[in-house]
Image (cartoon, rainbow, N blue to C red; front, side, top):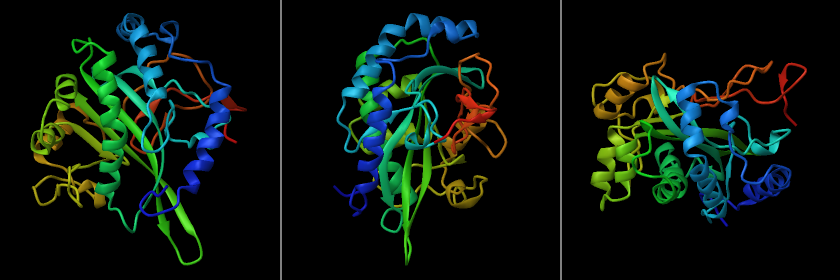
Length: 291
């Protein structure tokens, strides 16, 4: 199996490790309402707990093009975690908006010389986020009492070098208005789907990103007169940038979905490359426990 014309040896190895880790995790593990201090988040978790458990099971049974692993901490590869927290579904707050967030690791290693940032992000969006949106539409009521549906998906990008290959992690974060999220799948062509994406919050490695369906390159923020910096920062449409200003106004800007758990830990909260903040990972001697 290839991923950007690369034999899929990395993902196969990672999957084997992940399966061993998953075997030790509780079946259908889900964030417990008892862990949550915020009363609104606690109420939402309690009310929709059966649907979230069903959704998690459905995601686990779905055959993605490449294996996908739900994980609460996308900032660390599953193979490097001492214990894998697979509770990748939870309600969180982001700028006073309640978000149902799905986070996980897609075991893909895209060849960065053959696929652009936009093409890598599109592959991840189409191969992971769209199928999960279908599952959400099937398992979760459309009148779900939250504001947005969010995703934070990590994957690898490989940069071939003369003597070796270098693999780095990229994180795609997408925040859709709840109504748009449920309407997305009903739009028949990319033009209507693109319009939804253009008014959504989309980030690649913490920078605003103009995800462009069916295109080699992302939408150019700079050409559209929108501020930004770097490769990803020059790729946001006006509508999407307005959404980022309205809902994601944090320095840089950084997407900062805060986890719902109120548990006290010695380590600071894990922050993925997309800036989404998850509850602290387990610690050893005050440090995040890694293998």
